[in-house]
Amino acid sequence: MKIFLDTANLESIRKFNDMGLLDGITTNPSLMSKEGGNPKDAMEEITKIIKGDVSLEVVSTEYSGMMEEGKRLRQYGKNVVVKVPMTPDGLKACKSLSSEGIPVNVTLIFSANQALLAAKSGAKYVSPFIGRLDDVGQDGMKLIEDIKEIFENYPDFKTQILVASIRHPVHVVDAAKIGADVVTLPPAVLDKMLEHPLTKIGLENFLADWDKLKSQNPDIKI
Image 1: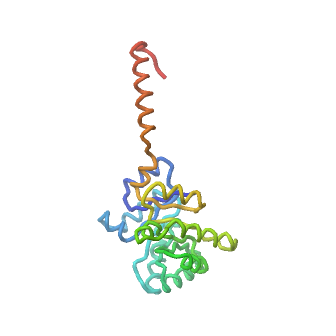
Image 2 (image 1 turned 90 degrees about the horizontal axis):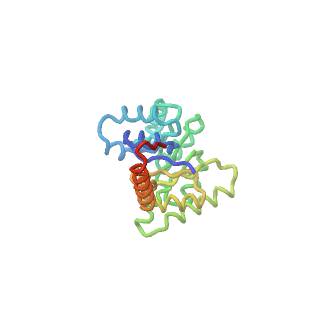
Image 3 (image 1 turned 120 degrees about the vertical axis):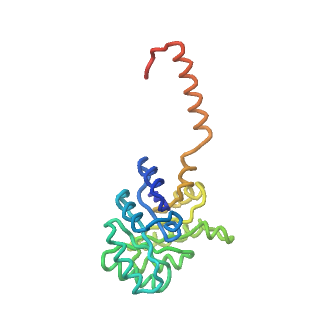
């Protein structure tokens, strides 16, 4: 399973990329706004740091604007995936951009029907928002199961399931068990995946024992 980071924060992107954990990045207008500054500079830097796919989102809501913005976003790099909303105009733009060789991520997916239509429009990725479904009392992970089953029934579909709106590490494990292609994570969730209290305790014990050994043999080295 691929891991994308859902952020526009350059410090976090560099941190996790240096660990070799990142296969790509997803961004949106809200994440760009959170970081402040000129989004153009951020997008240029992100596409340089990350070799994998970088989803950059249009802000237009109508077809002609999406096409114009999508082509402009693609100029930031060959690894740019244009992100469009799950709307009639968004699917129309998805079809047109895909036919021109520009990969598309259809976002704000909340049903299996929407994922199916996005796949038929030529999307490289569909982004179901599982956390937001959980927030309103629906089972977000059940949606991933449904989309996975549908896509497996039709091998001609090359669309990948990109699980979004992830709130905690358990979502990641569940998505991996189902066989989702990609998860996109906020930096805070990826930080939690790295941690376990027994790891910390074990390392402290190892170091304490080493200090004892070194006190008896001052010249010892690894």
